[in-house]
Length: 552
Image (cartoon, rainbow, N blue to C red; front, side):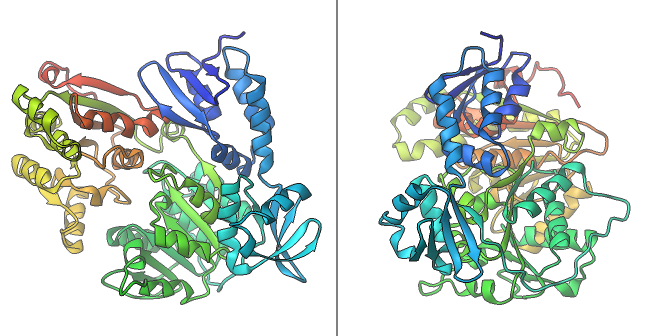
């Protein structure tokens, strides 16, 4: 027995003692293959999953590395059955390989004949396969390449895709590194993607994922389709590419609700691609409008279902997913793995912070109590109404004003889910409000004014969750959210993590109504950030007046 910070249990759960001096190193060691489930104050619970082990395997980890991470950090002997199961699970990845045969085209080849016999007899696989070429090889219909990878993943036999990619149309793209250069982790991320062919790069908000995309484009030298979450995000990508690469305005097109330009580099919004008319998606033809050499999915964790289906048909194209977190509340991480590609690079947030590339952040949950009469009304409300009642109760308003006063003069965002609540807060703070109904031009004007310091307070709805670059924002007050969304919490904190010119810390507040679903959802939302090493302190609203000034 050693004095390690980890307790490894036979049900694949890992208990990490947070206050142990070796906890930080252990968290990094298990991050590649274990997912955080619960994060109370002293002991965090992780879970080893098959998908986590396969992602680790695709990223170059072997079973010996995973076993060593468990054994070296465990306080007690690791159950032998778990170590065997880890090795067996990781060994499943790559027993089936998709290859391009010069004579027959796309084939599925087995390193284990029994596995091939098992999968070709599976009902969901049969229609995707063609003629049996020999004992280890079977033809695959090229159009089924994506669907087959999905089906094999569900059967527990994830295929390694070595079938290669079409080159696509060549187009010269160069990085113009005048006064800047790729950070070491950005260069490593690009290398990981290039050597893997396709896959996902996971980097914290503010760590420069757009630059990774630009560098990948320069490395590929091919026409590129970039899919983004909003028109504002499309414009930010365009501006960054114009500033950092040799691309000109004539070479970059925007394909959104207001513009339909197809150029060598085309930036399209998920929204326009998934628009339905008479039961069909008319804009999906954009995918075949050009011989794309690279497709980039910004905020890949947000891929909508139609884009998943579309991506199944794009397996011959190089695909790069960019995200701060692969967490999906709908459980479709497996589809990202099989259709975009496995995780090729993942940098812990605290590692990037330690290098000075993102700002340190102080996270605080401020709890407010419902008045007695309203507490009874909440208890008697329909279950479907309780989330909104707790999240939007006016008892939060004085706390929001106190926090805003506490950080007077600092660039401050108030972020929430419910428009009527945000309208009330904006009026109370005398701040501008940005929602989905705000015209794109007006949004851009307000964001520019905030960046320039002309205004220091903005109230924003979920439209600002993703891909909005507000580098000087240093304080955020979260007043309501999308139930228990972990990726939303991570993205909202990410609005603050751009390094500050004066080196100050960021402050992320969540105002929560005690003893309601609002508090339960907050606990769930915080799980991903807890996994990244962020600790939330909890403060009662009554303590705010006597609390010392927030450190800068």
